[in-house]
Length: 272
Image (cartoon, rainbow, N blue to C red; front, top):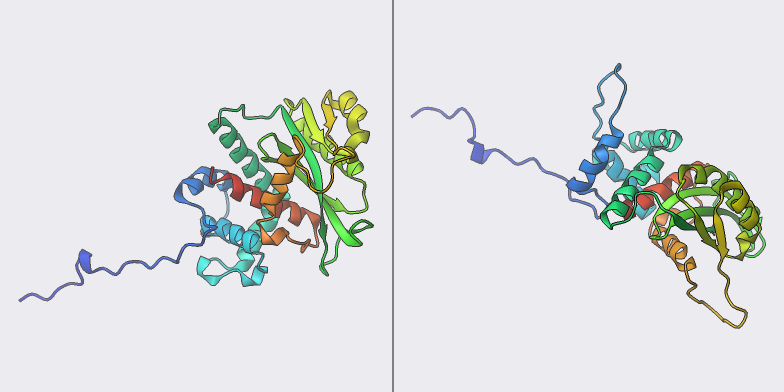
């Protein structure tokens, strides 16, 4: 009887894969964004990092709010490597680029033109932590905080975000955001906002030819009221609120908060 050279193919042990997290990208989602992360350098050592797990690690951290060092080891990528790519991509605009790409895909899928013709702008105040960095005193909230200005389309999909100190008036912060954002969206012709942005009506029309409609709560309306058009951007803030990393301003650098907001938006848009 001849000795076996080894176990048959049926006896080969299966490679044990880690248990999937709810935040993991599906095969279809990864196939969609992987080309956007391909390295373009022609020289240097070939990348050996599992980039899918790098992205999965970022999605996990954004949703759970864990510290960098607390990212689970079973991703197979050291937390410092995930942090390296996070810092690289927040500086080179990768997160914004992926968000833009996915938003266009979804808009096309639902029968809309890729670029929006209308949208809304609003801000949200968030409490800062001992991490330090840019902050300002918010009299209404009684404490040091930051504001997150977001511009969204009529579906509530994120277009642009800017984080700044809380003592900067909404209208002034909105002007800075729109000055940078609107050249990227030449089809935008109309925006909705609350009364805090009323000082931008004439400026927007003259500077960009964009109509700004102010939607305000009536004097006799008490408590929470769903306002036309305004509820869209407020719903986006609610969506972003699912990400525990955004529950407070944990980041010293405001560009890190902006990056986490884009990651949260990517996670929201990609299932669609």
